[in-house]
Length: 437
Image (cartoon, rainbow, N blue to C red; front, side, top):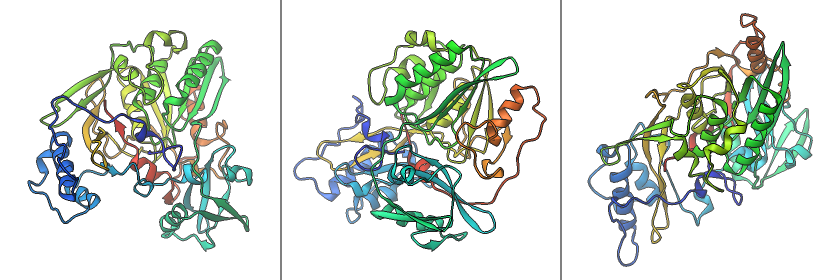
């Protein structure tokens, strides 16, 4: 998801602009007109766009840049993005980075909002809002089966909003919030095995050092099983995803293939090794594969918890691990983003373009999860309410992983699916795009 420390978003603005020596020269001459801007968009799409064969041959000078860009997008394209770095209004706003909460609206004796995550230290947290709380109204309007999206959009557009929780009205100011994506890490015993648990909510290179320290502690503790909780993770950095993979799967080397990129007739196909992926983080210094030696776990399998907003780099992590170890996925089917983009900018054009450029595959050439990656065990966390705290062993998804580790995989856990009306993390899953370098 786009999240910056200044307006509601982070990842994509931290990437350098895309430059290719063999890319067409589309720099306009003279004052930049709307026609030249649109021509720059079209020429860039002709070279980089995954569906470049479907592009029109003419430029409509009457359209704004955003309308023109929308007119070029292929019907299959859900993710390409155009934004103006100087204009905050062109950036999407997300619930977690604006109000410090995630929630879903479900059916429970009528439509009800369920708080799923709260950023520690946020105004929401300071007002006592916590995971598992219920609310029945947004800005004084009762929730229905159809209005949650509209009410949430109003929240994101406003400077403050209210939630009605247990008949109390709590006012929350809109903010620009950063997030430490590492919400919980732990080790515990299951029979004679030491199990590590990590709740990681965004692949953010700022926290790569912290991640390495956590995995080093897991290794020191002798962890032989790992539960990686990505249930709300919308994606993020390729380098951070490669880092996590390298510390999980012992069979990976620096020359192992992390992902295969398949592009159009101009860009073709290329393999990205772990060494290459680790060398270009979005922020901070390149990561040396050899520096991970004392942090890598000796695992034969990994349990990964997913939800319907698990997307982008989080899905890439799941798919890219499968050639190297057994991945046991628990939860709900993921969002379905098996695509990567590049960032294109020009100093004379006020817009930045992120067209979908590649299909993504793992080392064995497996991909195509446009409709999401299905879990091995389908379990809805809402099947056991109220929600437990993050990392609680009785959480139905975590409990399922523990039951398998314990050798009781056939023991039933809560697996009934609850009717869902809205998930506030889905917009982030839609906009978070893997940037291919």
